[in-house]
Image 1 (cartoon, helix red, strand yellow):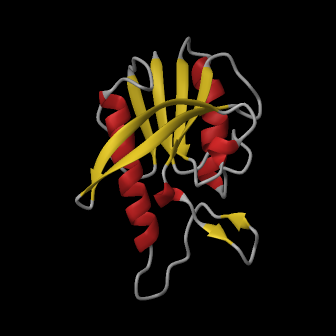
Image 2 (cartoon, helix red, strand yellow):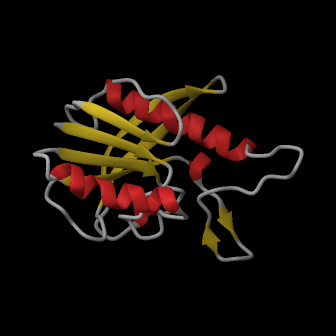
Length: 157
C-alpha cells in the first residue's frame, strides 16, 4: 500500500513538532512501512522547513483562495531518521509563516486574540488542505492507496 499522512506536525523532522500529534506522526510511518507499505508525510513548511539541509523542490500547485490564485511550493525534506519506505514533504507558502521576532523562532500555531480565537490557524489549515487536495489531483504524492489526516480535515482519496 502507498499511504499519505497529512498532518499539522511531524516529529520525524526537527522543528516540525509541538505536541502529541507530532509524536504520532513520527512513530506511525515506520510501523506502517513494516506492512509492505510506503508512506509519505506532508505538513506545512511554516516558513522554514523547506530550508532544511537536503530539502529538494518537487513542484508547485496553484490554489484559488479568498478570490485570488496562490502558488504553493512542494518540497521533499530529509527526516531525522531516514527510512527507505518513508518520505517527508512540506508545502510552502507565506500564509504558513509565523515568525516571532521576540522569541526569535517560527511558531507552528498562532495564539490569536480572544475576539478571534484560532482564526489564523483555521485559515492556514484551510489553505493547506486545498494545497494537499491539488497535489493529490496532480499526483504529486505518488500513486496512493489510502490517506490519513492528522489535522481534523477530511481528505479526498
